[in-house]
Amino acid sequence: MSMPRRNLLTGAAATAAALTASPATAATGGSRHTKPALSANETSSGVPKSRILIRNGHVIDTEPQPVAHTHTDVLIENGRVTAVGRNLHSKGATVIDATDHIVLPGFVDTHRHVWQSALRNAAVDADLATYFRLLGQVGPKFRPQDVHTATLAGALECLDSGITTQLDFAHIAYSPELASAAVDALKATGLRAVFGYGTPVNVTGGGKLADVRRIRERLADDNALVTMAYAPLGPSSTPMQTVANDWRIADELDLPLTIHLASTPVNQQPVLALREAGLLREKTLYAHGSGIGDDELKLIADSGATASATPGDEAGRLRRAGITTGIGVDSVALAAGDMFSTMRATHLAAKIADDPSMTAKDILRMATLDGAAALGLADRIGSLRPGKQADIIMLRLDDINMLTAERDPIAAVVTEAQPHNVDMVLVAGKLVKTKGRLIHADLRRTARALRATAAAISD
Image 1: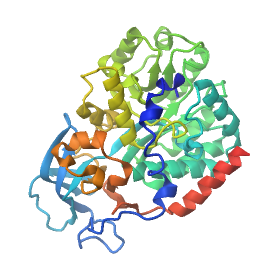
Image 2 (image 1 turned 30 degrees about the vertical axis):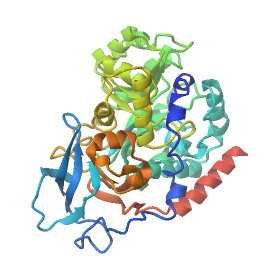
Image 3 (image 1 turned 60 degrees about the horizontal axis):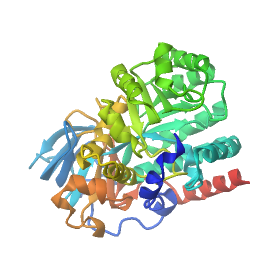
């Protein structure tokens, strides 16, 4: 969360899909389409074999720039993309019919407080101070089971809406038990996630090295589906001595950093303060950037660090400064929880700012390949380049809101699509959603538990 919610732009432009993407909504119904997504070659459990051929789709790749190809196939073997082209050989493969579908890399959400799924719409019209008071009031009420439930629900919401990679800025870690509960939930969903071990907003003493080290030992494999970052409060909120101690923790544990960044009364020029303390570093993801001057943005770009716009009017300035920039949802307490709404808000912000350099292609790239690069994951996800892991989604083109959108699939994804259009989701080649339904989640149980958590923290 940054300064007073970037006017009302994000909240106004990004609320439409919050309910349609929620686990409670997804618990009933499912796709109204009867055409099967999988061929008869699927296994009895409904999970594809190790060789998968996505056949005859409108395929969007994002590397080096987004481009759409009609009547195109994607071949996946052992969880990785091995070929993209027409009439690929399908012997021995599970064939997924992508006719009347858009096929593209899964979305990458570079900044979200996933535990706040229990606070949906609680601060839509709040200013920053009110939002922080809310977190200070309800955060200490969360029990481990509440963090687990809220994180599980938020992660499932991501998968349901086509977000396959999520940076969870988990500033709910009041105790080791709460941090463990969040990691447990992320691991349970099949989502690709970066767990950002965060410091609660009303705790000013900095991180506790022992527990950060404990979670680091648990998430020691940097090539696993769930990895780790360190998410301290940073120079916008804490004294520089605390900042230096937190940076030392990150260095000692070889962790990337992610922090909120804004000009505040605590530090009006936080990037300059980092430079003067010798703490500017490459493996840092800055979220927001409200009130940060062009000179400080240049320092970020020169350091090789990255940014997350969430999204408001930040994305254009960050990109023009030469910073690799992804986009993020931030919090469903304030806005919708899907990437489609976030991309539309980014597109609208560019229009309002009269920024012709920000095109639909740019925004889709931010939501995929640039987001992957911002998280240090561009070598494994974010595009369909052969060799990358198969994080792939399919959107229906025969839904009423997508009819005739094949004339420009990229624009359709950015400006027209919604979570209910997501027909299929693969993460590392594993099927997590098919025929419009998540397949490994007890959504009714999750919905009951999340409502119980929301009631408990409201008492």
